Length: 561
Ligand SMILES: *[C@@H]1O[C@H](CO)[C@@H](O)[C@H](O)[C@H]1NC(C)=O
Ligand SMILES: *[C@@H]1O[C@H](CO)[C@@H](O)[C@H](O)[C@H]1NC(C)=O
Ligand SMILES: *[C@@H]1O[C@H](CO)[C@@H](O)[C@H](O)[C@H]1NC(C)=O
Ligand SMILES: *[C@@H]1O[C@H](CO)[C@@H](O)[C@H](O)[C@H]1NC(C)=O
Ligand SMILES: *[C@@H]1O[C@H](CO)[C@@H](O)[C@H](O)[C@H]1NC(C)=O
Ligand SMILES: *[C@@H]1O[C@H](CO)[C@@H](O)[C@H](O)[C@H]1NC(C)=O
Ligand SMILES: *[C@@H]1O[C@H](CO)[C@@H](O)[C@H](O)[C@H]1NC(C)=O
Ligand SMILES: *[C@@H]1O[C@H](CO)[C@@H](O)[C@H](O)[C@H]1NC(C)=O
Ligand SMILES: *[C@@H]1O[C@H](CO)[C@@H](O)[C@H](O)[C@H]1NC(C)=O
Ligand SMILES: *[C@@H]1O[C@H](CO)[C@@H](O)[C@H](O)[C@H]1NC(C)=O
Ligand SMILES: [Cu+2]
Image 1: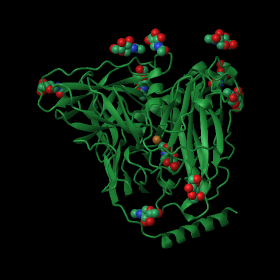
Image 2 (image 1 turned 90 degrees about the vertical axis):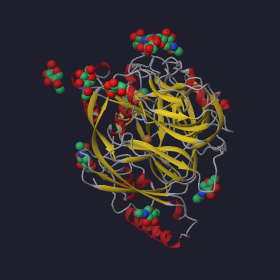
Image 3 (image 1 turned 120 degrees about the horizontal axis):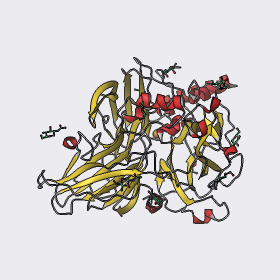
Image 4 (image 1 turned 30 degrees about the horizontal axis):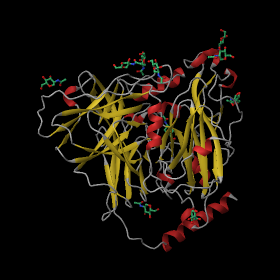
């Protein structure tokens, strides 16, 4: 059976290649990414870090909607690596998506792999990052998608554009930070600095001279492309005395929304317009952690800055600092998400597949309570009480070639047990099942998922990222989801569309999307440590009718395990 369907898939691909008419073609963008190592000093500490083309952050790729990207990745660093093109839908190019052991095996040191994909129907800011172990900490960069030549932004053209890339810096080798956490069974050490365009800013030691600067002319408007590449931290973002108008998030245009504070989760991008309408001077662009864990621990409580400088002002002025919200202002992110509206919405009005998924951390017991997680156990993450076990070969490969025994198709649509999710959860429920299960979706089905945060170990806002799709965030609330009354509060008209969103801490959120992309798609907590600890699940979208909606065969250079 598997053999026959494979032959059909190959035949189908051949007919596609020879019959497909040439569409008015956009450009071919070819780049070489050399993964290497580099010695870098931050906050008085020198580390050898992994970089792309010797740059930290990595190179910004700028393309037009419709372009075909051909990125040859040469791995000259000592670690296995894969790259993910965060937010790119990868329609008919799932082999280029990048999560290790989900769509591909790693590129081992000394080898190369060419990512080949076309960006269609998406404009704005996306990004790329390593999608294996902890390498994302330094292997990341912006992917800017401009409108096709001849098309324009749905907002006034800015004078200039600036990417602002948020990251985290460790005074340690990040692979050691992860290995140490895995060995102890506990969350990894906190980072030692937060960065904007790789610089920590004026409030850290050995940093002030290199603080990132943006030069603006009085009276003009600018587009800031903000990308949160951080590993485990969500941020509040402000600019002293300047309001910001959000015009896009996760490469989807929004109705203009003016605010003085942004909330940016790891994985999100936010495009904002600002106008240099204040008196000439220096103003801090400042970020601080938003942390929803009631304990108030587990994050670095520092302020990171860049500087907005009016061109006619003196360097010697002391910049104005904005006041940032309290680390635990959980109402603010809730309202921020609810305030954003998609510019041209097209929300699925009916639902074919309805899922209710609990999400949160848990604990797996260790021999003699020897681990450093809770109760001597090991920290894990789970969806519907299943903590994802990474297979030894890529799931997409196993699916395409019909290799049995790699995964099962029985990921449940509901939690195995109903309980007071946000109450005092009995410790007997804290340990999830460890398994590699996928949720099968029919091609083109409309899917609604209600995520329910659990109070297992503790409540916390997790940024959930879905590969291969954007989704509408149609509803959210605190406490337990009520299927009788809460659907009436959904916005099915113009909710925000995202690829990563936070499920309110101790609350729930509902999303909708159409499963129009056959393939294997990871969904995970974008706190990298949580994802490494099994906070992942996988959708398998079946082929549709017709050649353009089937998983194509893999490229010849796809890495093998
Ligand atoms: C990229 O993929 C397309 C579609 O499968 C294919 O036609 C093209 O030859 C590929 N390009 C390269 C450089 O491999
Ligand atoms: C993690 O932090 C502990 C305590 O500060 C320190 O002893 C340890 O060396 C750190 N681990 C790594 C990998 O930096
Ligand atoms: C910063 O710049 C000042 C003035 O140029 C210089 O004296 C100082 O050594 C620099 N500090 C660092 C950490 O580079
Ligand atoms: C974090 O820092 C701010 C500003 O320095 C301070 O007001 C606040 O108490 C600190 N919070 C925690 C949880 O340490
Ligand atoms: C935030 O934390 C402070 C202690 O640092 C606490 O007093 C306050 O109640 C918390 N606020 C919320 C909304 O949890
Ligand atoms: C657990 O502790 C017991 C008693 O101290 C000891 O005999 C046993 O070897 C330990 N097991 C492990 C796996 O460490
Ligand atoms: C939660 O339940 C446990 C066991 O039933 C009990 O010991 C504990 O005091 C309860 N905690 C709270 C905050 O109610
Ligand atoms: C999760 O499944 C395990 C069995 O594998 C069970 O012991 C535990 O109680 C379940 N927890 C929840 C929250 O369903
Ligand atoms: C998928 O569904 C959309 C919307 O209902 C429809 O327009 C489209 O034709 C369908 N695609 C296929 C290949 O069936
Ligand atoms: C690197 O990837 C290869 C292929 O999957 C695997 O055999 C090897 O164990 C990996 N190395 C490490 C250090 O994970
Ligand atoms: Cu991602």
